[in-house]
View 1 (cartoon, helix red, strand yellow):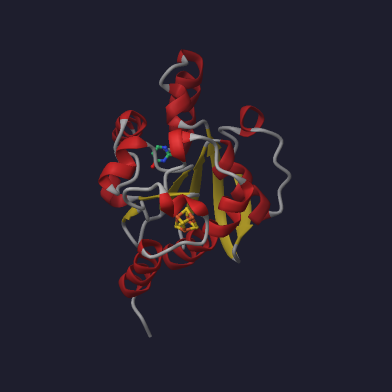
View 2: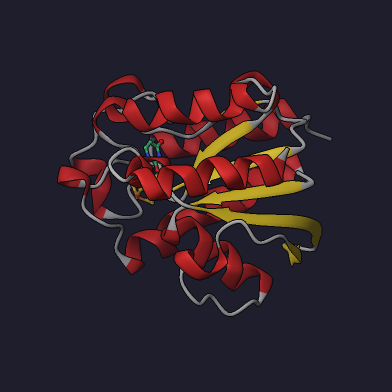
Length: 189
Ligand code: URA
Ligand code: SF4
């Protein structure tokens, strides 16, 4: 049987060569995700931005700095959690993900969730939240309605505690949303 590490490396290799949607054409580096393969908590963002595309790592730009701070605030480091995204390649100009791109890319995320088997999934923003809600069979009524609520959900046959939150990138420029995000992290703690 392959180890978690081997299974994840196989996914990384596939992503490196992936051309299942058009985003491979404009990306510099794919961003498969990183962190502990035994993480209890998995964070799912939307898609790589400028710096993530440059470095091939998730949440390393301004939104990432805020995420690091929020994690540190509840005594967690990046190494203890797993941080992934709905899309592994950057949409040009950071435009919103398109449905066909989400459909093409999320089988990778599903496999990552199955390998890690987290207890808690924190979805950051409406795209990640809408996707995991649909997996859980829960109607998604919008991020402003559901953020900070704690759901018990069946996701890919795993018993998951699901906590949707605002995306750190929107909290950067909106003090109200930033307080809401900080409050939601206290719930996570
Ligand atoms: N925003 C995201 O959704 N994901 C990243 O990796 C970086 C910024
Ligand atoms: Fe493949 Fe996902 Fe990149 Fe599209 S975004 S090319 S599906 S890895």
